[in-house]
Image (cartoon, rainbow, N blue to C red; front, side):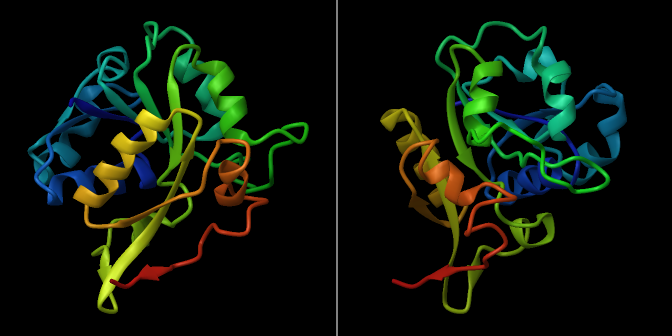
Length: 198
């Protein structure tokens, strides 16, 4: 399974560090080009910088881009053809951190409309970057990562990846149901640092 990250800000970089610590090779891309990621690549040799269109061809693509920049980031990408996109985004304006008006829709459903053919799974969005990249084993248990989606096989794939990274995955259900619970702002679950025992 090929994995990539589109977006190399705080969350994208935290995801890259998680993958690297688990010994999982991946590619990463941003709007400024692969050369701008030389420092991150030096830190994480198994995370290889590439162009965005190459990153988008992976089997599993983490999308971690500021909300307002997502349409431009994905507009000219190749057809998704059933590949999995992990929605690690939150519908916030930057730098004000005000909620974007989504007309009452779940943010992942709005995102899915921009990614026709992709199997979208909401995950990796509800913890801050510092906590996300810290040791997932905490207090004698494993830190919880919520995930949700409308495709059962895609969710199984991401559930296994979450486990491989050392977290405890909790399936919240559909994008419209569970996705709303974990989206920020609006959902009750973001920023909660929960640990699962056993």
